[in-house]
Length: 280
Image (cartoon, rainbow, N blue to C red; front, side, top):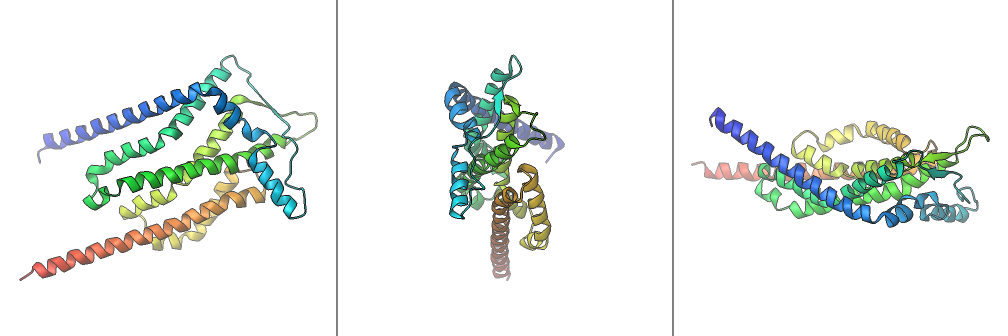
């Protein structure tokens, strides 16, 4: 292949990538427009719900606490108000929150576009797994979003909203700060839940093996605990609650990596057998 052909091939890849980004951005924009028009439902029912002491997570923790013979996890109120202190604060938050929801709703389509971009570099048997890849990736992402919304967010809001350094200091949080915490908690959890998919591709590329993951399991556990401490309030219960699914995801990733390696070894054996049979 000539240098000109290589250059055209590279430029063609850039063109495909450009249209992949354009279509993905357009999907986010369209879903974001839908979310923008659902302002009442988005903010009253979803965004501000974890601020209410009657939120489902708080009621569940209270039920668990009472079953153990104590009311330590029951709360009557979360003592802070959410306010906007800039002229364009509410409108700006409305736009960025709509884009955030647009990304969440468009995630399956974005994954589909990524798959289309990677498709030419895949084997025929891998191309057949497109639907499974999109479904599993989307399912893990949505599970992570739900985990971030129903677990990380209420734990963080309850702790930070009730924390005071002195009785004279009152908690009145800016709208951007409140929504920023919620969005960061949900999005980080959604991306963390994609760990099995990431390990899948790293194993396919030969960058990760199950032996490597097992060898560094203890270091991964430390990293999980540190990450849990960063994205949750500084109390041991919250950190353990968040760390448990991360550890499970890591163990699942080891199993996935092992299955992929076994399949690759079987394919190599078949190829070697064919080569040996073809020899005179």
